[in-house]
Image (cartoon, rainbow, N blue to C red; front, side):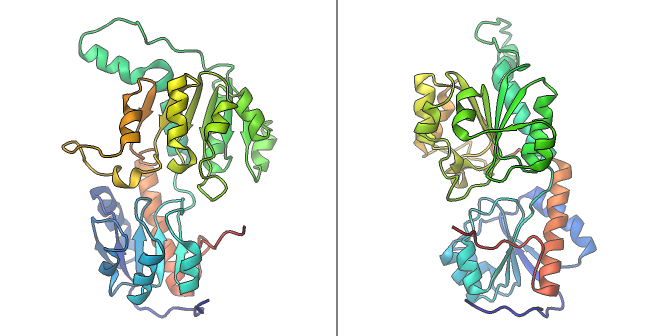
Length: 345
């Protein structure tokens, strides 16, 4: 394993920011007034072919759609990049073990606004249940018929929450406000959630009893395709599944089969397991080549948003500030409180 010095001596950090949309540039530029870093913004995603753009920079800043695999990291190491700064909470798109082997630090933004994601999750539930998106289009066409728009009372329903970190906890509080009964699952139960009287159960019980299941857990080797054919078969008929966490928590083909059979009555997605080639881009003039995604779009009981759950002004500001604070801390000390280490298996 490559050794890393305790302190990295750099006078003025140079950062290459990838996947830079206008909102990234605006927020980062404003926050950088307090840090005075030298920043270059690249609209392209970071992956093996674009990694050489980091030449001459001390750190790269990446997002969920960037691919920081072993090949990309080898190039970053060759270009003397010392840090990968994620401006998001998830880190499944980074080969953490390879980064540690090369002596490249990896930091993330563990919390930016749990309210943003939790509130978007609730929005998906309400829209799917009361068909708000379909009703809006009908009224625009002067169609005021109510046929096909019937929903159900959320009050007194069982809500299954998988993952009870900060976002999951805020979501639980929102659903308790609707008078729902909460069933929670987490490998590491949240003591604050327990104090609120929330019952932790095994996944099988959660699947069997929940009317609505919402995913708020990270993507790891353990949670990959957590929602698969077996899991769906154990759920209630007409179950609602919501995913605002990471796309690959759900086996897309399995959920399509569940929708076709009627086992899955509603599906709300803000993430998709092959979203890297789709989300954050305007593809309105192109033919989508992902057959599974196109199939999902055809179901009337599926609602997809393009990874926007985090997208509030408060969250974007917090992401930018925490990202710069992470970089500053790591550059000055060679370590950071938000540094990611390889997971133990």
